[in-house]
Image (cartoon, rainbow, N blue to C red; front, side):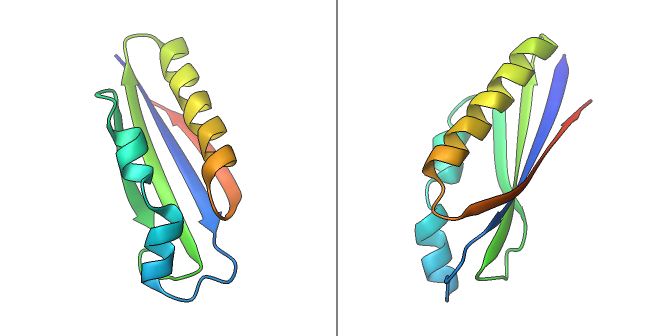
Length: 93
């Protein structure tokens, strides 16, 4: 069993409320959390309007499968986020 933790820091320029933040980041949990091998949560910046941190925990039988899933998540985030990705960190357990 291999586990990867992908942590993504996002800034949301011009975001003035938590409601707008939810609209701009809406669907992250639903889009990525559907897979039985991925758990998703907002792990930081919950009370900030202009920033957020999200963590994705990926579990698979082989490390290359975990790495592939993390790469797919990163690619999709870069294409779909209505904000700027400041940092992406990968950790494997």
